[in-house]
Amino acid sequence: MKSLSMKKFFAMMMVLVLVLGCFAGCSGGDAEVEGGGDEPTGDVSLQKVLDSGKLHVAVSPDYAPYEYLDLVTGEIKGSDIEFAKHIGEQLGVEVVFEQMNFESCLAAGTTGSVDLVISCMGYSAERAESMELSEQYNIHNNMTNTILTTAEKAPSLNVGEDFAGLIIAAQNGSTMYDKAVDELPGVKEVKAISSIAEGIMMLQEGKVDGVAMSSKVAEEFCGNYDGLGITGFNFASEKKGNVVGAAKGNVALMEKVNEIILKATEEDLFLQWYEAAAEEAKQQGL
Image 1: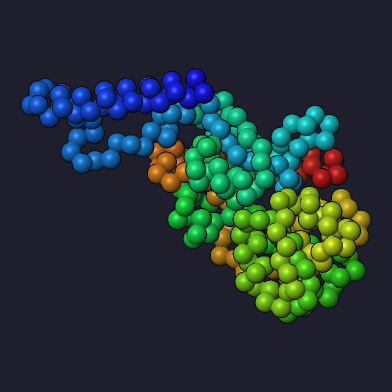
Image 2: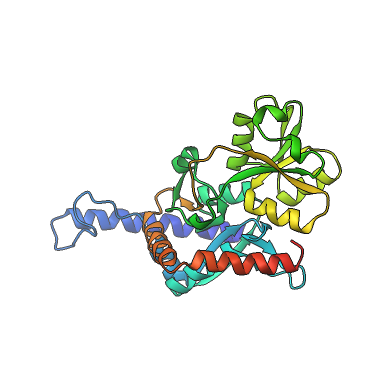
C-alpha cells in the first residue's frame, strides 16, 4: 500500500509540474514547445525500449518450429524466437520473453503490457483495429492452414462439408478459430483451446476430431506422432505470412520493426531461422 500511495504522490507532482510548465510556456517566455504546433509528441514507444535497454516480447511457446520449449534445457526456441532476438540485436537491447498462451499474448499486446507480440500471429482486420501490426514476414512458407486429424479420418476430410457433425479444436483468439467457425458451417462444435498441445492431447483421446493449425506445424506433428494425418482441406487465406503486434499508437517502434523485417527478408534470414528450428524441433520429437 505504501508503494501505491507514493506512486500516486509522484503522479500528482508530475501533473503539477506539467501544469506549471504550461503556464510558463503560455506566458510569452522563450520556452520552446516540443514538437511544435499541433504535431503529436506522445509516441515514445521506441525511445522507451532504447532507454530501458529491454524489449519485452510476448510468446506462446507451443507451436514448433516457430516457438517451443526445449525438452532438455527448458529454453524458449524457434524461428520466431530467433527473429525476436534479431530485433533486440538490431536495437542494441536485451530481449525479455514473456511466456503465456496465445489469447493472453493478444491481450498483452493490445494493452501494452509488453512491447511486442511475436507468436506466429496472422493478420486480421479486427486485429489491426486494436493493435499496430507490422509488415508480413515468414512469407517463404506461404502459411497455408489446415486441420490435423487421425490417419484413419484424414482421407475422407477434403472439403468443408466433410466436417459436418464433427468437433474441431482451435486456439482461442486465433484467426484459425474464426476461420473454423466461418468455413465449416456443418461442424458440430468449434472448441476453444488454450494451446496446440492441449488440442493434440484431445485429438489422441478422441475428444475432438481435428485441430486447426498451420500446415507447416501439422507436418511436424505428423512426422513425430504416430496415428495422425493431415486432411485435404485448406482454409481460405489472403495472408502469406505472419505479423508482429504492438499496442495501438506505438508507431515509432513498429516502423523500426518494419525496417528490420525488410532487411531480414532481403537477406533471407527467415528461411534460415525456420529451417534450423524445424530440424532441431524434429530431433526432439516436437
